[in-house]
Length: 146
Image (cartoon, rainbow, N blue to C red; front, side, top):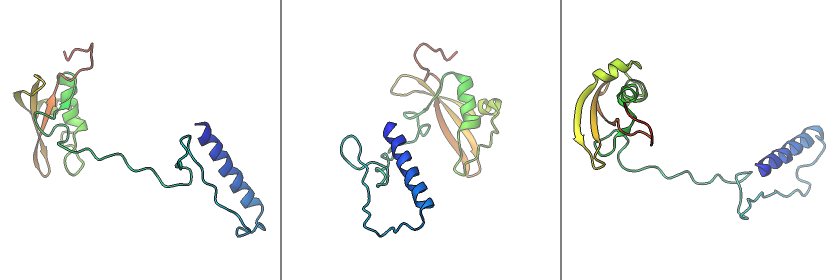
């Protein structure tokens, strides 16, 4: 953070100098400054951005029994389906109503490889019904789903 603050200060000072001294000739032998990080390599300050994080591969959460959306209890499951889940067009036809989320529950599909019983929801999306698998036993340690 100290380097960032210092770099911002240097940039602000350079901008202030350039704006108050229009007679300065930019081609008068100036050289670019390379800012390096603690490891000696170029930093994001005036250099290329680091590569983006890797794109996750494999099924998305909720796509099947082995990759369910993790929630803690039935209420959190209903809220997810009714408000957080998105159809392909970015909408959620259940309007955030947990009762509509509960009504979209088809039933359970039995246990997955973790031994948790997985629930199946069918959401009426514009592109057609979308199946969403939810593990309502995905609670943090010390918290009960009920």
